[in-house]
Image 1 (cartoon, rainbow, N blue to C red):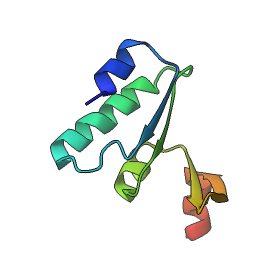
Image 2 (image 1 turned 90 degrees about the horizontal axis):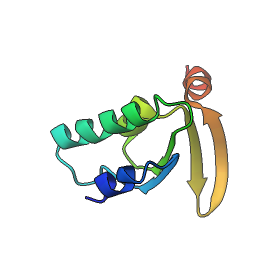
Image 3 (image 1 turned 180 degrees about the vertical axis):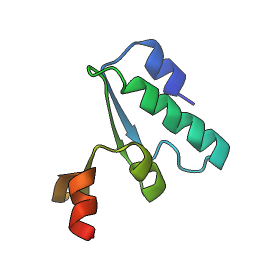
Length: 85
């Protein structure tokens, strides 16, 4: 996995594509915990694509839905949840 190498450079922003896809549940949780720890520094951010709503629910502050290259919506996670209730 390239994540340790990416973190070794002390980036402010990680841009990732389907980072947890294909991982077993225990490793998936470890990776998400690494992201959560990383973003505790207010100067750090993670932008990732995922088809896993569980991953999104666990760590996303903002959600942007893109379909065929067009942004359908972009909302904070809390606003999106409130809109669905």
